[in-house]
Amino acid sequence: MPTARIYRRPKNAMSSGRANTQNWVLEFEPVEAKRADPLTGWAGSGDTRQQVKLEFPSAEAALAYAEREGIEAHVIPAPERKLKLQAYADNFR
Image (cartoon, rainbow, N blue to C red):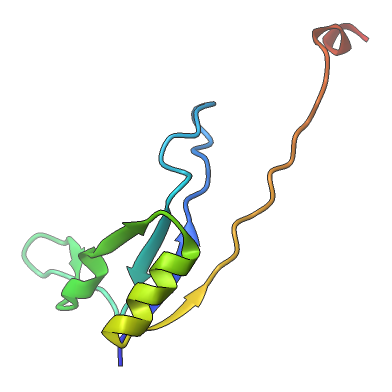
């Protein structure tokens, strides 16, 4: 039985935007380890499920899909947003 993890993408640290962080992602866990290709040196494996990432509007929808398709899945809870409230004047203290 394939296993998968369901998580919410974190905000990109390189930008202030929150694009693509509202959806939940179902991603299959790797079955075999990656190995270096002798000709090119690129890492790869024969497991094609690692390329599949499905997006859902909620964790419940992702879990329902996993149960319907016979996929054993576990949900990784979304981290809490921590707001650092400060004023511009705090830079000159």
